[in-house]
Length: 437
Image (cartoon, rainbow, N blue to C red; front, side, top):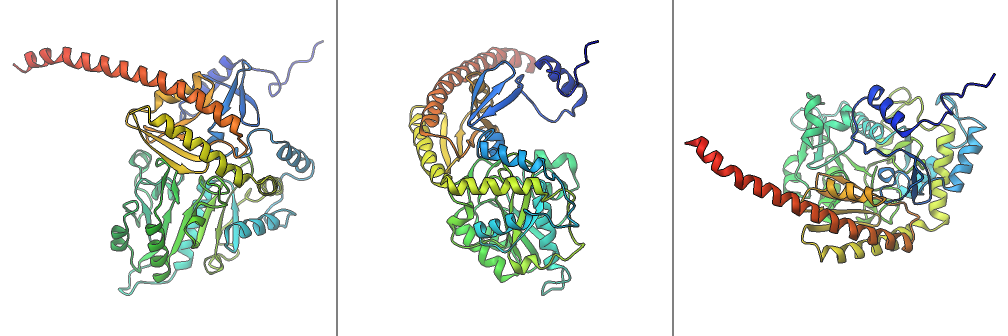
């Protein structure tokens, strides 16, 4: 009698996969009808064997691309040893990874979590713990948190409370009280809202979901001074911009002064779930045994893989590659922008780039996918590029060639849609006037 295939190993058709997702998975993502099955380097492959050039990298997660041989070896090795050891005990890799991250960041101590949102939650708790029991000159508690307009910090309740975009916030109100938003890069507004009741200011050195918008030097330095003056935590959210994406180890390093706390995640464990927040000793000392914890954060397998990721970045000099390829990519896009009036601006640093359009970006993403190119759109009109650190000049040239075709085709479609809309509006005017009479 033939053995029945295991449901975990039987190959399901893309149609069956999509049908099961529609029936059993919560409806929180708008996905195109593509099922990706594997990847290699900067390429992804779908269930039909079609190859795609990946310039999204899992939204900045797959910094070493797909199936990097050193990462695969590390996962296989550690999976055969111990995937999980409780944080009630030591494991061989957590301290080594913490030391490496302290060296990279200039900060002193690390707490390991599972995601960027968890890292943000922990950073906020740390700021509140540091300020616990302290009051302002007026006697008010030192509990206020400042964040920036246009920010995005995650989907959990604390992270959402410091995320500015209303469409993310409104369905879950009321959120955590005591949060106020400062106008982005507005030093005067920052000074007006910062006082001795503030326990933390949270900033993204480059706003990612907000459109790849860099924080200004003047704003950072004033924020640093005010946080020091009022004994508040300056928290840098480097979940998307950190760990090499700008061509620096951290994006804040272009400012020449340190934050008190920094949050990281995305590429840290090369695709496995690992986040962390790092802090100076002055703030880290506010957490004592029992005040914070994580069941899965910092397990041996993920920490070993994260160490391998950081080592690969160092040994293969990938920060230099990020800077060089980023310059080539941006230069090529700016040449294309000069030929297309619907491109307002190109922003970013290294391999975190945003292409700001004056028209809707979704058709460009759709057309890119049709041409086997993976990008995405944020803020409705900003095309976001987050390619792996390992891309070559050849990959950049291939991207620019395909992207030029995307711009031409999508622009033509957008113009046709706009023309049809104008004709429909003109046709409707006599009807509307008649109805008004």
